[in-house]
Image (cartoon, rainbow, N blue to C red; front, side, top):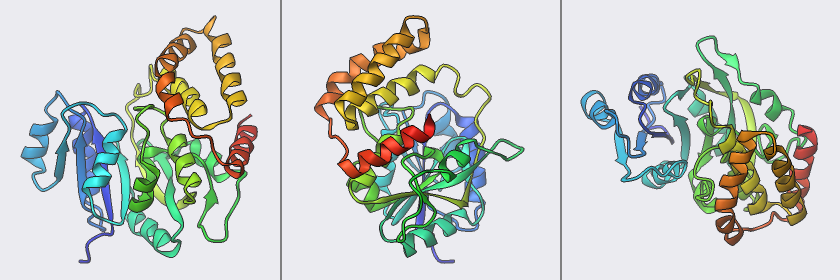
Length: 288
């Protein structure tokens, strides 16, 4: 069988049983992709599990938790032209990776492909599917699907060269809602970012997996504004969050965490080019 052109990177931390389930699904794929597990310094039995039950799966063990940047370490370690991301609770449908590779082969400007995500044992469509499919950015002649500036990290396939060209996930955000910033950075470098619903990923998050993450996502949304959006926009979003913080503990936590990271965000600030800022504004309007 011809080796798959798409490798799979799984970033994990302290979720050995879920990782084992994900690996079972990925190893059964007809595409037989190369799989690389990047262990974010797990303190559970993840290393033992991999050594005992999956000795042929490549593993990169990091000395400290690097959050979303673990995916970048994985991309650098693989040499396949395309890389799909899975979390330790998500996997790809049979045939999905080959379908994604065909899109990437046929469209050289395509940097990132966002898949349709089915959630849980009932395979319910993730609400984000409709948001992405309805993107006001429309179609481009040299790209498949519809153009977007957002995606779900555990349900995307990247062109390795494009991902590295854009710098990968940003260290200022660390983890949580990191996708929009990468989409901005890919698009600013001229790479296409699209949603292709014919490529399917499965996501089985635990019931409480997003509990307590609201502040984290709001923090990173604000930091993304400071990193890439015009100053009036970033200031307005900061005022909005500050107003919410008066009565919302989650908003208060998000604002406090954002202010701690704001100096680093300002040092890395690189506003979007005008054409891309116009696209971001169109998406802001659609969200409202």
